[in-house]
Image (cartoon, rainbow, N blue to C red; front, top):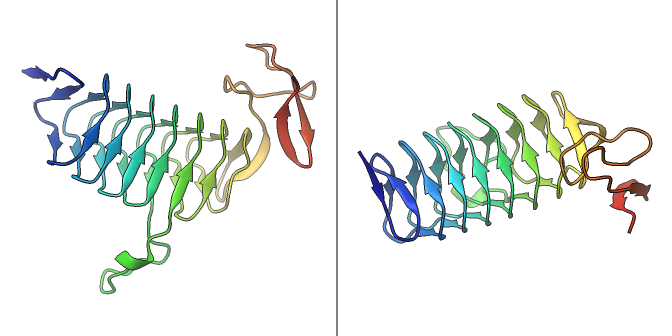
Length: 191
């Protein structure tokens, strides 16, 4: 049986600790656990078996697919997509016998970025606006806005548009017809 809240939807199996902030229109599905300090924006969708730590901030329109753990000091800005089983870390050099909670490194995933299934984002890095992380990639350094990165470790192989379309040499989005140019090693829309 499912329970419907007035501001957001919560499945009966989900656990939302007292104090967590969840925005209007968000959907919290089966076996999700949201810790008390988490902040989740409007119209987010958290799939089955998602964990959200205390010091986590999700913007509006964030989609987190099944089996994703978002640990402390991870920020996902508006419209970020996290594919199934992608991984965020928060300690760079963990050891079970050494407590390193005071050494967490902040991870920022900027507006509109996509993280593919089973990709890993090593803590302390920034994933740029509208970038795309390929399935299974391991991000070990900052990713520029609109970059397409794949592999282990992740390397840039191209550019993607706001709509997530891979751009050819013309740098014109085949879906939206937006035009881009590369200036100083960064992709910019031509207005």
